[in-house]
Length: 380
Image (cartoon, rainbow, N blue to C red; front, side, top):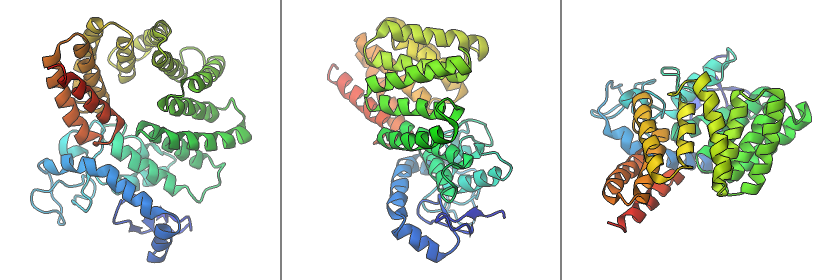
């Protein structure tokens, strides 16, 4: 059967797409009504549409490269269905630039679902064109679509576990750590029961639990979780495994948040030494670590590192990729701390405008950029 499953979990092919969020499918109008009223999709649908609303302004502003029969003249169109639709397509947040990155969440979800028939679930996370990860609104929409497609699976099913872990990770990245923590604890209980606390999935979920706790400023609890995961990963995977390095990086983040600057710097340096040798100095993971090292330095030294990282990020993923925007905001902070208020204000205004377009006005990173701009403006 080539059709997407009905979102209610009835097991029948989903041939009708929700006209609101375009992220879930139904086998009939009856199932759609049931899911809308009894299963809570009414609220979820509105939330999904609200999350993509911030991206619509950016999506509608570009000149189209192709136009389907249903698209008005001048409207941006989905690169998959070649139609504008309502709501219109949004930026995928991957490496595809301009109109090449525009798509409906539902269109990408359907393409991803078809890939799962061959056992490949990467279509929910990675762009099939540029092979870069989706970010922000697109990633959230796809995470919800993937989770919705496995609702009728047993809770111990590996596919359901994978979709749940992806949803937990995405919730944390989208500034919803409390929901991520709840999902992690739910998944972890099942994983410990079926495969033990040392299984790959259990350790990955524990890592995400630590991330969710850290994002809620529960640093002591997060440190305990990270230390446990780091010990197990070093034992089972070795000190240079990418997953082990991820946990060491996360522990460094907790140290930094608690003011343990020397401990954080040491952790980051250990991670970067391995990454530069294994991945290369310009790999995105290495750049993230370099940025974290800059966060432990005095403002003048940090400024040099931030500028270096931004130069590579702009060339590799573009100036408005979420990672690039975060480094650009950090540079503004370093400039502010050196009392270079003029350059800091100009750069921060650019970052804030881009963050509103790409992330949305209510995203935590956009809010932080706004707060920093307000702080800088007081000094002008």
